[in-house]
Length: 594
Image (cartoon, rainbow, N blue to C red; front, side, top):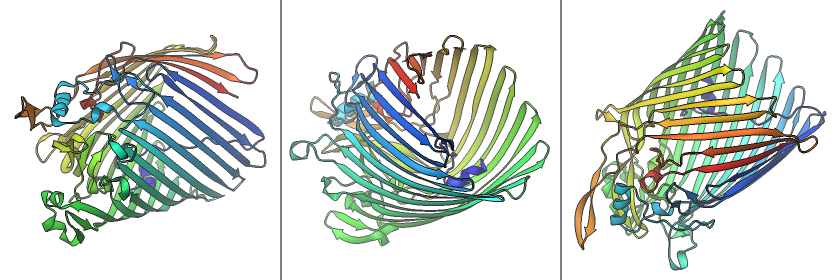
């Protein structure tokens, strides 16, 4: 767990690291083509990659993907305007020597993503009806076309890596640049029909230096420094006030982690990280919103100009963060290991949490940030017991996390705009307690038959108001049986059951809104709080190897998701207010390795 300090002090929940495929130092070439098709969405994708290595240590690789999907479908209706277009490409080259090497990598990602049409409702009456009844207000015939509301994303990533090995250690240096252009299109009329309502350019420069010391066999030490410069530019020619304003964000950090083989069976680890963060924004606030938020008395120093109905402001924030962790691992027996970790970490409010002020099209909600948000501080204790012997392996991971000034989004009303009616969600802050457990079990029933099961549960409590936290994932349990017969052309058959329980711990955030009936406003309770009912999904997977082409390994996979075509909604999916989730889906995949 101490290794997470390498990736930022605000990684309160940990990090997932994906390492690129290593190309061997020899004359070789290999590649892969994967073709996917799906009945739900009536589309598919193709991805292909080629990697070439040389015995001199040089290598190169290229990859490309194309994906085209139409509207998804719930069991009883079309989820209108949920198609996807995706095109991406990447290429890289590098050199791997005996003691040093480098790599260069570039990727481009382009996507057009439809946003559920039923999430953009024209008036408050229809919005309340949709939330209270769960029925989508817009259901059109299936189509491959994508219309507003939608997103368009163009993302560039360029990365350079260098490493050098010594007998006593290793140095890694990385520089990366990312440019992300995000366009969101609203349902607009006339000359603005094809004009983006949100246009953001986010540019990020990052530098990371890491050094690993191997001077001692029993004591290993890793340290590093990092820096990041990020600028966000919002296009003011959209005709709509941007959700996120212009800002510059600068981050500088340093860390050190160490592991120590104390004695036979005992290993200790510790980590420490310091970060400094600076945010400098330029934002126009409607005076009505500024007064409504009560900013006049607290943040008048941010006001730099008066533009009639708006204040021009220059919010500046600086944060100092310190994170630390310590843990031990004990090998109880050759088959049993026990881990214990204690950590404290801080997370800064990000620009979205501070400055959001408008419609977030992807979620179909108006989001309001809060300049008063403070850093949240996490005090976490976790332990893991893992066992593996013969046919049985399991891991049990309970944890408890007390978070001071926990930041989250909470609904508090509806707002009618010229673009329609939308629920309003505000960033809030409370002291919170999160406790839970994750369990994984694997058991070989017989040689060819394996069971895999998982269980996860999270308890979230607002300790200030003594009530449950919103958006805590409900308990879930998965059970899967997998049959594998290598002699039968590598045949694999699998069945998986996914059981998601009802989340009966939730806060009451219901509120009243005026709904027009017979021309008269009628106060109506908006039932936005209650989570969806529990659901049980069944999935099937299969694959087999084919001997079709010489020197090409061919694999065919067939699967069915949601076999019983069950109606369900995911509590953590904001689209649950407007429609059911995806229904039955048959998939076919062809994979060629050469």
